[in-house]
Length: 137
Image 1 (tube, one colour):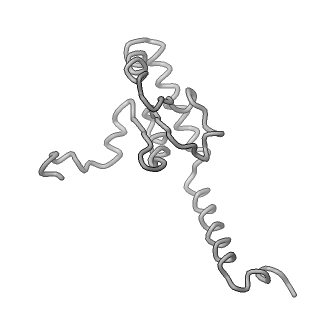
Image 2: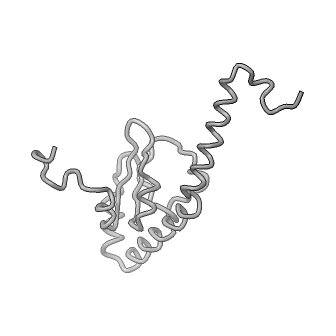
Image 3: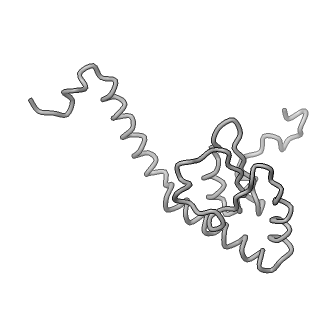
């Protein structure tokens, strides 16, 4: 891949964080990098084909910029953010608010606790003696 695309083809993801805008697009499944993009202080532009668990908690045009599946509005949104004074201020505010949201809502500690509890519950569900687990007899 490096031979074909050059030495930057496998650059670390954080190198992308130097850009003001980052596009997040669902592919064959949900995008796994949305939280990382929010964390970056760049402004994520999101194309979502699937409903995600956080969509009732994260607010479009407050934490990120939503795009339609056709992305027809992409050019005008970038023109507004780059060429208008209000647009530059809006883009910076959205990037900061998205960053603050992910810092407070999607903390690594919370994800670790969730995974631990999920594994405990899974172990209980697959145990043959599951009806008696956790109960004194």
